[in-house]
Image 1 (tube, one colour):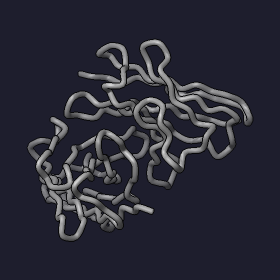
Image 2: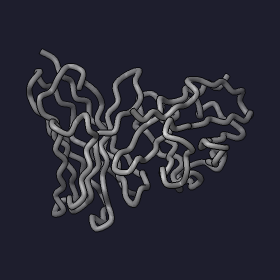
Image 3: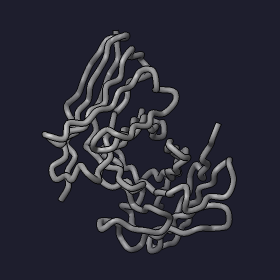
Length: 109
Length: 117
């Protein structure tokens, strides 16, 4: 069974920088997995922040950036704001099926 | 601004079916596709499947394959997801997402489906 792994939780100070990562049990994550990063805040529908590893949607603040980091994909938040406190999910495509990671709960403290 | 507007809260008994709709405010069904995702409190999101705008390409997550049907109505710009043989663990918020050319963009507001006897 394919598993997409993320850090369960991270804590960052306001104004700081934090990197979340996403790995696949099938091997290195590449562009062929069409990696996405999705943000979920309580009581709100999810928001897609990043697609295809590095691309921001028009509504995604510039402080969010996506990259490859070794065998993983990464989401870096620079100049973290209190409103960035949320759950972040990685999403990967496996030839006809999409699989979400377990999510990272980001606490801004 | 593209909006996906979903149907309202549903309550069903075990064994029943539910059909959730997702209407797109601005659409080009030639290129659009839709994924359906559900999420329960304290759990991560779960992908149920994807349907292209003209329903000529449909993929279902294996665990739902025998219980889910996704359809589209191009005349109204609406996508539908029907889940049958409901169980209590199907209680969740169900979301539609515009998913085209491997790019997930706009999400619906979510539809709460409660399965309880």
